[in-house]
Structures are given as structure tokens and as C-alpha cells.
Image 1 (cartoon, protein in one colour):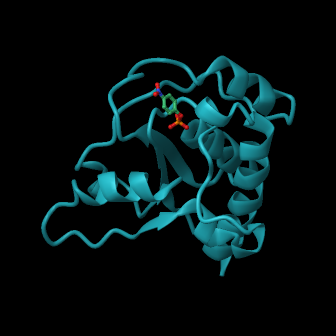
Image 2 (image 1 turned 30 degrees about the vertical axis):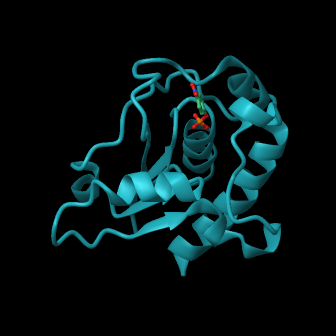
Length: 147
Ligand code: 4NP
């Protein structure tokens, strides 16, 4: 079955494009996109250091461009996935009345990784650590969508 999955973070240049890239590489039969809750980086490609870290794992991000999350995304996707609690709050603030699209944390799909959010590598500078978490959680997401 094909699902429409939207990954969301703050800037849409680090975590959510990385999650999109990992997921579309692993499960290309789904429809996948990413967006940021802020408008800060609209139109920009993923952040260079994140592109580089992903590329070294065989994940290409260079065709992606940042866009802002909008209320219309609640109708365009079957599942919306945020990276931290702030993302979830900012997403939920735009939910149209009556819409029931599930909004989840990425880390919900990998309880064994021992964190309830993906720390923002734009600030931590730990791009590989973020990718480790994202890859583990995307594996759990893929399993969830198959079950
Ligand atoms: P992201 O990381 O939400 O994972 O894309 C960020 C990128 C840029 C900024 C914040 C977070 N910024 O403040 O510009």
C-alpha cells in the first residue's frame, strides 16, 4: 500500500530533508515530502554539512528545496511526522477544524533508541548522530507502514 508521508522540522534544511531522503531511498513506493514550520530557508537546498553526511551513507538530498508547512498539508498527506515537541505544537496549531490526520514524533517509531526527539544538528553540529537516529526511526516507520 502506498502512503503519503510528510516529514517536518523547523528549518527544512537539516532533519526533515534527511528523513525524507532516508525514507525515499528505503521505501521509494511511497509519496514523500518535507517542510519546515518556519519560513527562514524557503527555496534553499539542504544544509551543506547535512548533505555531505547523508551522501557518505548513499543518501542524496541535493534535489530537495525547503518549503514552509501549511494547513493544506493536513489534506495532502496521510501521516505527518515531526522531529521534536516544538514541531508538533507548531503543526497542530494549523490543524483545520475536523481534520484527523495523524501527527507523530519520528522517535515514536523507534522507542529503543532512547530519545523522544531528534536533536537539531544545526545547533549540535552532530550530523552523523542525527542521521543515526533518523535511520533507526525510519526503519521502524517502514515496519509500521507494512504492519
Ligand atoms: P532543521 O534545523 O530544523 O533540522 O532544518 C535548523 C536549520 C536552521 C535553523 C534552525 C534549525 N535556523 O535557525 O536557521
